Amino acid sequence: MNNEQFNNRNVSEDGYFQVDIKDYPTTGWDKFKRVVQRTFRLELFVGLWVVLREMIVFNKHTISYPEEKMPIGPRYRAVHEMKRLWESDAERCIGCGLCEKICISNCIRIDTKIDENSRKEVSEYTINLGRCIFCGYCAEVCPELAITHGGEYENASDQREHFLLYEDMLTPIDKMKAGAQLEFEGFGAITPHEDERVKKTPLAY
Amino acid sequence: MDTAYLIETVIKVVVILLIFSALAGIGTYFERKVLAFMQRRLGPMYVGPYGLLQVAADGVKLFTKEDIIPTNVVGRIFKIAPVITAATAFMAAAAIPFLPSFTLFGYEVHPIVADINIGILYILGIMGVGLYGPLLGGMASANKFSLLSAARGAAVFISYEVVTGLSILAPIMMVGSLSLVDFNNYQIENGWIVFNMYGVGFVAFILFWIAAFAETGRTPFHLIANDHEIIDGFGTEYSGMRWGLFFIGEYANMFFISFVIPLLFLGGYGDGSFLGALALLGKVAFFFFFFLWTRAAWPDVRPDQLMWLCWKVLMPVAVINVVIAGFLMMF
Picture 1 (cartoon, chains in turn yellow, orange):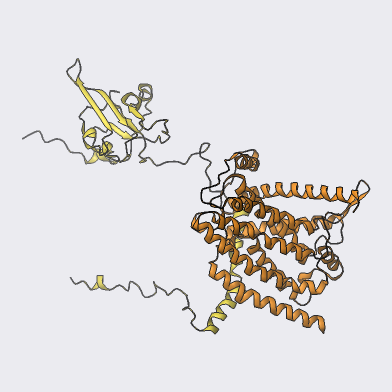
Picture 2: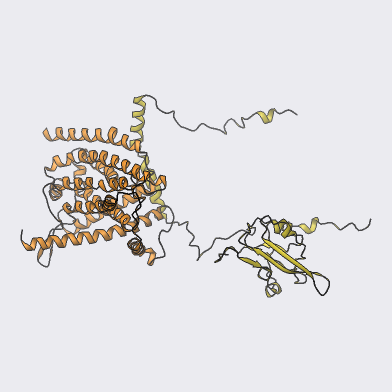
């Protein structure tokens, strides 16, 4: 195999064409001719017509924001959400602390304890939104798909440290019962048709 | 000079002052709306229906803003400069017949403050004096950008005075008078000056129109307050109502020049009928709209291109135009 086909840059003979720009005039007579041409070709009025057409067509591009909002993509990374398990409505978070570990702006604080059933339980979980850069690493690293990003971007606050508590992020139980929890499609989410690709754990050693 | 004349003149002055101060405000509203529509935006929408009261909001803001005189400025000149701009703009209006004369309660009103025999010369002269507003304002404020823009503005003004003066020479030769009322009456008999004398009038019209953009400092020649430096040129150091006076002066100037162009070239108010008056207002509206239109469509030219256009193109054309007009009138 030789490299000739890669070194040949002439992709096609008719695919390229020279832009029709004349050389800059050098002599006085040529400059004069160019001025006269530009004057009497009335190019200025083309621009006038374009803006007048836009005014008459009246097709506005403005979105008057508080009243109407732009649709955002499902992968949009706004304020975090904590998801519940579909099977049991229990919290998905197992308190592994990976999100706290990977957070590059150190805005996640997680504290766990052992509950009465000897299971690990999240006792404290806060995200300092004043520091969060919404990079999505926490959602990507989460092994349980528990912490994800949501679509709520209107999080203006009267102080810089706007903390997000675990209870606020958690899907409300009534919403969960109604089956209205939305899975996040962004960082860390399961790719489509993942069920078909998954293999049984090889237990028979 | 009897008392009735004096009272009449004072009333006219007050009416013109009030109407055109208000129009200057409404002109900003129209400018913002037209620019917005041409750029597929909405413009002011929230103050009043369709943002109509935006003008009032701007006025309240300008009036109640603190009047800052920065350190190192030449205080007196800094303070008087905006007044010069606004005052000269309104002084120029004295010789403009805004409407044909009409009868009000059995009293014949001439809607012109003073029909002086040097009308157009007076208007152009006073508009030329208006140059001192930006010039002194820019020189007095201790800011090098203000100074630069003032110098640039002065250069533009002085250059284009030449074109303005030369371009209206041919119409003046046709009419034989400087009064705008005489211009109007001449055009009743002989048709609009634009179409007169085998295109001489048309060339004069185009030249005057181009120069009007420089006189009012509008967009293709918007070099006095230059947007491309992201500062307001000579108005950089101004705040509150002093800056507002510059603004009022600029917009009043636009309105007055929009009156002068149709009066000089496009038949003015015609035979003085109601329809003629409406036609004049329509022409004025078109020329004012054109100022806004070009601002949306055209970019600014460079200062050197502006000077090139003035001295190497427009001025020779104007001179040749005058010469041709002279020959045509002689033979």
